[in-house]
Length: 88
Image 1: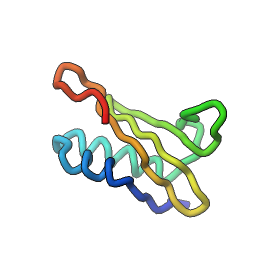
Image 2: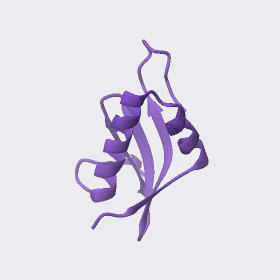
Image 3: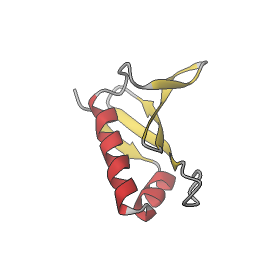
Image 4: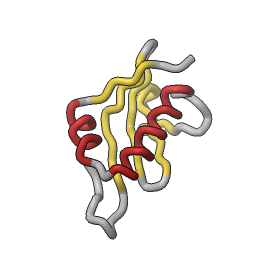
């Protein structure tokens, strides 16, 4: 079952100023996470925390929290030093 996705204000601001190609990668990654947030491809972000997870694809990274009904994206980043984007 696909869960609803919420974004923190920081992630929304970052998403809105991303280059178009990176925004498409980000939204594709978020769609995949929403479809299966606790799937085998997604990783726990911290050993002692079972709800905060992380996933990445093609230099776009997302940290998110899984609740009963929602996926809350709490952090996003683009890791491409050649373009000057490192982390938000």
